[in-house]
Length: 354
Image (cartoon, helix red, strand yellow):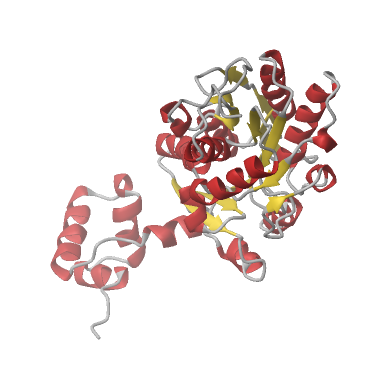
């Protein structure tokens, strides 16, 4: 195999020192024009493309990239509309700074330490629905700037969150104001143990994810104010995959056919609940109201469009990336949520399905 042309070869051919040849590529303003032209001519003749940018950045202590550290595997990450929008926000800021993004998956607990340790990045954005402490501990060992998303802020750590508890309370109060009392809950993953299907409130309250715990607290408080005990609600845990969640939404309706409204912990689950209802001939919202959480793009395109609690997902990603580039003191940012009323919820009425 032919040896690749090195900077030393160019320097020798151009009859200059290797340091001068390096300056031609890295600090051309300090090299005389005649010498620059001679070095560049020999570089072209020999087929030398220039210094390896990775090596140059490593020598400078930077690689010009942010690592997005997530607990899900890469295929699931890109199938999730929330995470795609989050990445778009991060990408916008990276583009503004001429930087790249490295997606770092810690789905394999055995490989996660090595994956984090060897990632060529200048800082990390840590986002996961569980195992936040484990990932933060791995990142701290790198001594690089990092920002957490949807995780409890720690001393000396920047974080970007939304008020999940307030948003969940808004969702429950919206259905209650429409007269619904037979409410069921379609839940996100709670303990990360692969369980799907019916669950009880005790399991839900002990969720490993801060997002789930906060949303549960918001639902529970709003329902309790109207005399409805969370423990008595029918609830089913489902995967964050619309196609797979449809069957579990149907299971929820099988278990509680008297349900007039479903609170879904995400838009993916909300859209699955609508599809499950329609497959059994129920009309949404005439026979069943459904509300989600997040306001991913698909929510507005549903049939009917999904009522939801909107959080600024794009801005969440943007702000996390900006905090990395700002390199200032730790900041904890709480972004707002709002109710977006669409056609999937309506006032409770006598239903023709019963």
